[in-house]
Length: 197
Image 1 (cartoon, helix red, strand yellow):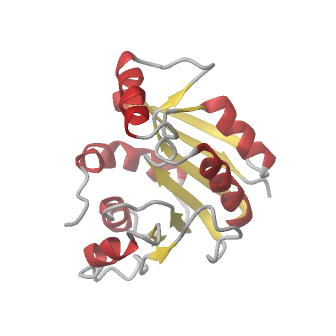
Image 2 (cartoon, one colour):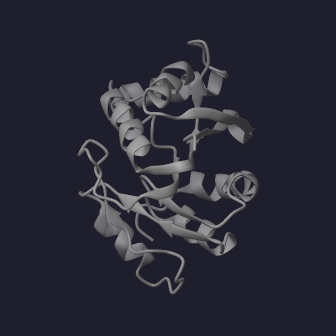
Image 3 (cartoon, one colour):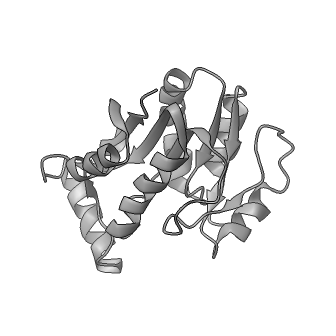
């Protein structure tokens, strides 16, 4: 498998526990930044009531397509090429947008565009579920997160753990309201916003 992620293997079961509650009804899920496709394969198998649409950036989507080519699950759709900065997104309306461990590797302007694209793509009543590390009140929630943030910025100054308050501002400006904030293992969170009906 190309771009195999050890973190996906570690976090897929804790994320599944939350998605089983938050996404209990049939839905079409657009996953932004599917990476290797490990989450797409696992969640589409474990949550058969969901239609899962993986996506990845144009430069790497072929690796994702290669990884998922062997899947015979009808609920797992063929991966789309999606650049969050190319607005409006050329995707079908979705009842859920899901993304894991992506916002801290995007430049901040791309993070804002992620929320713009999500706000336009989500159907009324739909949910945005975002997993990863976040700061609160401008503070790291652990020393390990502070160390991780330094390592990100060493690779690219535009990367870094995002402040929840800033993300929530982006969400609100695009018609989304915070619905739940789930504490997760390893100092991560799963944040859920909802688009009002």
